[in-house]
Length: 100
Image (cartoon, rainbow, N blue to C red; front, side, top):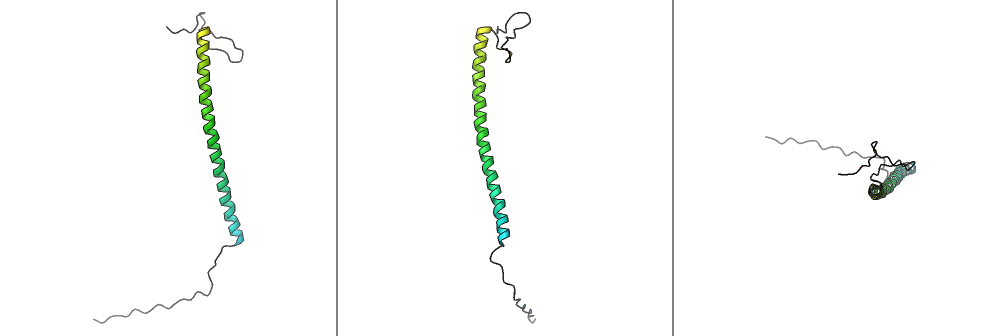
């Protein structure tokens, strides 16, 4: 069997040179978008940090409230108090909320 020669491809010469850089407008657009993304990510990080601190503050304040409630329970027999007026809300039968 004889070998069939495949024709050689002709070389295509690109007469238009390839660009080495993008346009200044494209570069500014990319830089603007990347800078905005970076700024937003920084803002999110700061917000998360503030959120973390705020959550710790809430837990600390809840612990303080528990201490105050225990003090009120010991002194008045209840910690059910109207926080606007300071009025103690005893049970309707006149007894305080005492644990048996």
